[in-house]
Amino acid sequence: MIRSMTGFGREEGAAAGKRIQVEMKSLNHRYLEISLRVPAALAALEAEIKKKIGERFSRGKIEVTIRLESDGHQEEAPALTLNLPLVRQYHALLTRIKTELNLPGEVTLEMMTGFRDLYVPGEAEENLSALWAGLERVLLQAMDRLAAMRKAEGEALGRDLATRMEMISGLLEDITRRSPAVVQEYRQRLAERVRELTQGMVIDEARLHQEVAILAEKSDINEEVVRLESHINQFGEFLTAGEAVGRKLDFLIQEMNREINTIGSKSQDGEIARRVIEIKSELAKLREQIQNVE
Image (cartoon, rainbow, N blue to C red; front, side, top):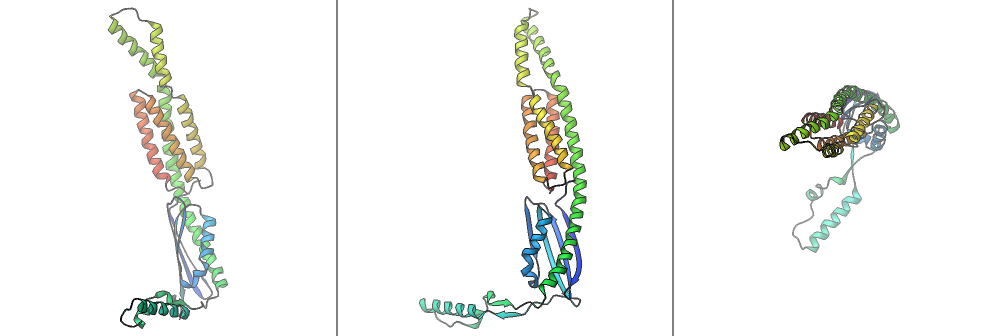
C-alpha cells in the first residue's frame, strides 16, 4: 500500500539521567530532506540520527526536534570556554588593520566580544553512549508513530487515487466504444453532403470510400488507447506495491497525459472530446494528489 509523506510522531523516554522528547513532522518533498534541531549535548549524534531516519524513510521533508530535560527542567546551557588562540588571532588582525590604515582608537574589549565564535561549549558531562542508547529507542518509537500516520493517510490517499483511476478507465471505455461510430457517421454525413451538392447524381463510391479511409487512418486512436490502458493497469499495480512509488506514479501520469492529448487531437467528435476533457481533469487531480505520495 502506498504511503503519504504527511505525518507527525512524538515520543518521550529517559536515559543517562535525562528526559528525552522527540517530535517529528513530515511534509511532501521531492527527495528526502532531514532538518534537525537538537541540544548542544547531542550535536555529536546528528549524523547518526540522520542515518537512522534515512534508513526508515525515502522521501519527504522531515523536521525533527529533540529536547533534553533534567530534574523536570529544560536542559541547562552547557558551560562555555574561551578559544584563546582565536582571540589572539582576532586581536592581531584588528591591530594590523589599525596600523595599516592609520586608524584612530584602540582595539577594545567591546570589539572583541562581538565575535561569537570565540566562545565554545565546554566538554559535555553526559555519557554519550548511554544517552544515545536511550535516544535511539525514543527516536525509533517516534518514527513508528510517524510511519503509522503516513501509512494511514497513504491508505486513504490510495483509495481516492484508485477511485479516480477507475473513473478514467470508464471514460476511456466510452471513447473506445464511440470511436468506430465516428467513422460511420462521417461517411453518412459526407455522402449526404455530396448528394446535396450533386443534386441527386450518382455518387462515386470509390472516391467516397477513399475519403472515409483517409479520415479513419487520421483518427485511429487504437495505439494510444492500448498504451493508456497499459498505464492504467500499471498504475493499479503500483498502488498495491510496498515500496516508495511516488515518482513512478508521477511519471505514469505524465505519460497518460501525453496519450490522452494525442487522442484529443486526433478525434473530431464532440462526444469523444468531452470525455477527453473529463479524463484530463481527473489526471490533473491525480497528479496533485500524487505529489504527497512517498
